[in-house]
Image 1 (spheres, helix red, strand yellow):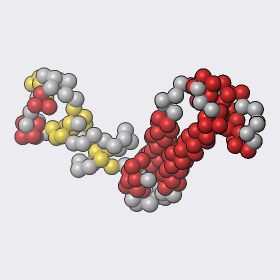
Image 2: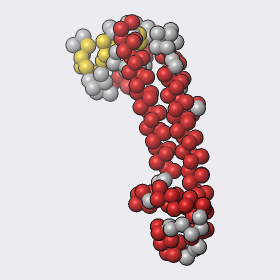
Image 3: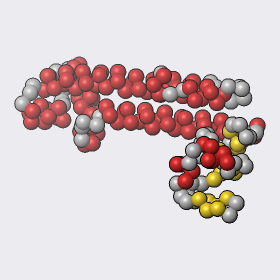
Length: 188
């Protein structure tokens, strides 16, 4: 981002002292050439609420409170999206209809584990089509259920730990912004 006298200058062409500069000039000009026009390159503002104070982006107290509150909400949303993606990857290899049958498969497998003569119409049909014994299929279903529970539990627990960490930050603390920025999915 480029500023001239504290105001944004866009690299889409501009006029200064009756001289027209073409689009893209700022990107290719040297720092000295820009400085001759009173233009400086600065980092993008962290949010629309930030204002350039001549040295850095800053916020007044009201804007800071709003920014931190918004940042907390957006961080939670990003973590939830990451968790949702991770959870959906656990079942991505299966068609939706099969995933929808998992609860019934588990019920039937648990019933068969308790009583080998318990009815298991879905597992019986799957086992017949696959050419495997119903008891073997029921054992596989229970093993996959356990593996899914461990994997999904780890993802859910990680999401909840990050949510707890975000919620524990005192937004009035002087380093609240840094604390929020330090929380990432990879940290938990």
